[in-house]
Length: 190
Image (cartoon, rainbow, N blue to C red):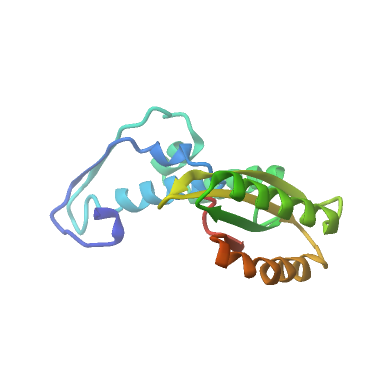
């Protein structure tokens, strides 16, 4: 709550408990989010003429996001984060698209996501990377089983056409309880 930009002029001490909880999230932006939150919350301590202190409790004190946040080293964090993303073929070096399927029966959701993966594999170039299909990080939500796959690519001229075709073909399936979602450049993979 205090990290959201509220100005409390008399706050001189900020404590962060389990600061590294977000680092375990299955998302390539987890380190960025942790760094962002820690630098924001530490900026709330010691406003105006009052000195401030920040205490951070973490199980991973050597993680680069924690270290750079402690030093308030934005440029160092940026350089390391971009190097990691470049090696892992993640944005901004690659584009990503997430395809999600959900259904009330797990077998039905799994069957459809594998069919879509096959359809995508047939049209993607050899340089594209297909992650999955896998159960979603939250495998069941509101009595629906969720499966997903992620496509990482630089240039795929056939991808938009294939995704449009998939959406058109799966619209009929909504009557049978299927939900198919396509998210280009998703903000989260959770």
